[in-house]
Image 1 (cartoon, rainbow, N blue to C red):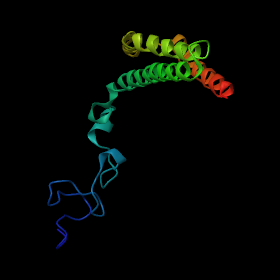
Image 2: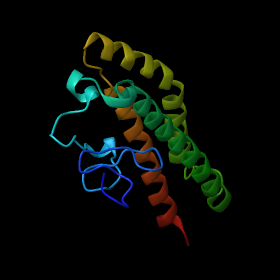
Image 3: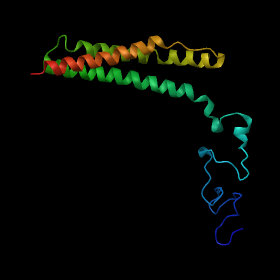
Image 4: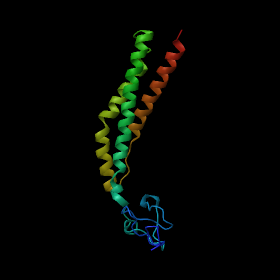
Length: 156
């Protein structure tokens, strides 16, 4: 033990708070990829599994990304349609925004179906075709851009 330091030498012993100190006395953070004093790998990495159960979160992050995309398109489309209708009258200026809102609504409606397909594709090791959803998302974004351009160009 090093006097006054509250830790054992460079091997990494518990400190006063119960946490493990790494070599040099700093806190040891497994997320930083810290190795033991002799360069050995932690047990989770040695077995080939992701630490802390992170191997199943990829599909959930994808699900949340599609939910954010659909929600942004739906809300942006509805908000843009409302602004265009209020300032330019109800007519063709609001149509691109309505199209974007519909694209967002369809993406939101298909989200859980897409998630189930992704889960089964991951378990079976097969690729997943998301071209239709990606095309729908791009169509919605282009509709918002077209509506915004029409709104800006038609402003007095």
